[in-house]
Image (cartoon, rainbow, N blue to C red; front, side):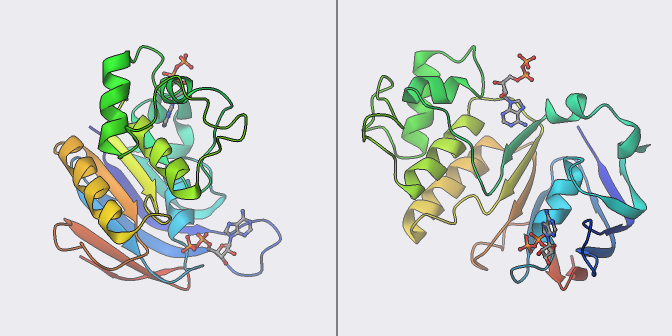
Amino acid sequence: PIQFDFKDVSIQYPNEKKAAVQHASFQIHPGENIAIVGPSGSGKSTLMQAMLTFAPIQSGQIDVNGKALSTLVPDSLWRQMNVSLQHNHFFYGSMYENLRFANNEAGEKACREALKKIQLSHFSLEDQVLEKGSNLSGGEKQRLALARLFLRDASVWLLDEPTSSLDAITEQDIMDEIEKATKYQTVVTIRHRLTGLENMDKIIVMNHGEIVEQG
Ligand code: ADP
Ligand code: ADP
């Protein structure tokens, strides 16, 4: 289990006049289900990047289980995470190869189940997904990226607008699957829609780089 503790964290990208995140303080306890909401450009993704050690922190500190994140070997943290960022990366190759990227031990059965959860079970595992004109749509790519998460054991799931390319019904079905798979996991989700927030343990509202509300 991992606990994150943001202590007065400010983040400023090189050559930017204004900080992307200003004086952010909040905690993420093991097993919590947290939503980060707020307008575009308000710093939501930057907060998530900071949890992954990818953000240029200017002041303040992030503690992970009481130790400064900046002193940890990031690999050991990443191994415990399941991450879906906005620009999902794909490989050429079959559905199967794409799924096994997440876990090269995953068997056929587990891969088929993952495809079912994200409603792509009409594809066969052998289908070449990015070659020969059988390209996936934006929504299908996003769903394939999410399918990978079901094949990995991770105590923390970080999801940056995981369903932004999906229609509302598919979105709901997939969020239900994610919820089922993460009863005991920590889940931090950046959300663009303000629906379905009632089951969250905590909502963090960002505006102009600041946390304007949390609870
Ligand atoms: P959100 O996720 O809420 O849309 P971001 O965290 O992506 O917001 O962006 C916060 C601010 O930081 C914005 O002003 C954005 O332009 C800026 N920003 C984000 N990423 C970078 C980057 N890699 N380099 C420079 N500025 C960035
Ligand atoms: P290795 O020791 O072989 O590098 P890892 O345990 O680091 O194996 O990763 C196993 C697989 O899981 C790799 O294919 C990697 O791309 C994928 N992976 C690693 N970290 C993450 C993550 N945070 N989210 C999604 N997939 C990941």
